[in-house]
Image (cartoon, rainbow, N blue to C red; front, side, top):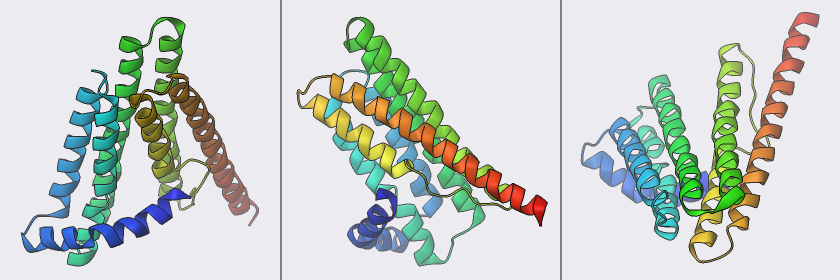
Length: 208
């Protein structure tokens, strides 16, 4: 999936920046919160106002830079359950802002039923995209695993931001609508995959 490859690339590209921030005494938690605040602000200011090209480019850069806090934590030996919890929680805010921004844009700038459908699809992706990590976290809390799936976070963000970028460049809105349909289906299938994985593990425990 894109998640693993993207993480390795980001480690190479942004390692120097992570080391610089560590030397400046900036904490990984501060980077996590600041990055989320910038992402939410960009998503809810640029996208609803129709600045799709600027929004896609800005959000793409911020999403890639989201790798910095993890690198900093590893460099300083400060990886912790708290850091993982904070990062995951902040990710939910960022993801919600991006899909909400797309939905608001559709209602404001796309006429007729197409706007309503696109906005509804963005809302569906927002909800399903929150259930995907919840299923994983809940499984982990029960001592089981629900990793992987067809649409992990990085995959969802790449698809939506590329679609927004293309529409921002002047391509038809239907590209974004189709991308949202595919994301909704992929997210729903990922939820099913994770639920099925936990179901198998729980029955294995019962039969043991």
